Length: 314
Image 1 (cartoon, rainbow, N blue to C red):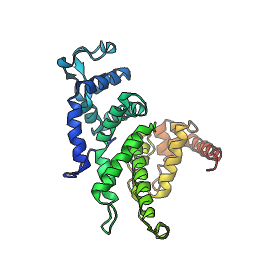
Image 2 (cartoon, rainbow, N blue to C red):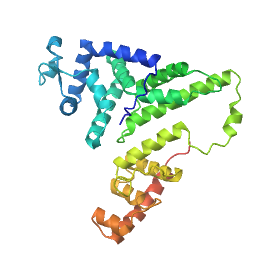
Image 3 (tube, rainbow, N blue to C red):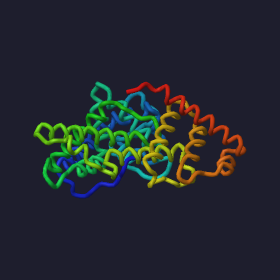
Image 4 (spheres, one colour):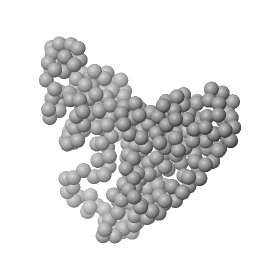
């Protein structure tokens, strides 16, 4: 799910994006295009349940394929409302579905690709502001205004690349993480060009996680919660260590590749944590016996190990 927290008075390119957005939302052609996407991907009913359809009789029929929605249309503002929404598994799932629809089209080469990418960029502005502010240094370097421009350009490039993650809760997190990586590479290249010695900085100890690690950890926690990998209901494991995050990432990847079933993943994740769920409690939740649950975990660990051995070395 996208983060709706938007810092006030950020100015610069973000204000210009907001001004352009108002013009885009008033464009009947954009409304026609958005409605066509939603009808094609069978998302109109789900979107109506959250935002309500927009009546736009002046726009006329959208396309011949939209015969089931007479005098109804959906514009960029309805997509933004969904992408910025909060609250519950249902809205999170819709957010992922709408974002994937936009990313698939943003990766295309037709005229609609630019529109899809522009909607995604608008939805990701809160994340872009945080990324830009995180790269500002009080002791010199580029200003917030300069870094903001780099960040928005990187976000647009990542959006057009068409990289879509299938895990629940991951499409937006991956966009933010990939954008951050692009920005860091761009700024590092600029510092190298001006003679700054980055090799020394790389050798300095840094016990605190960097911004990229923080974004990735949050993405893993979100995906793990959606997959039921936390042993206790509502446990987001905010303070989980790096080893736990790496384990969850391995389990999620194995589930994505079908090397592990969801139940296998829970058998591992519920046990290998700082506060493991007792086998009797885990077995009762899974509807089996403690002995059967232990055997399932043993087999799941073996399958996970085998799947890791099959991964070619980088």
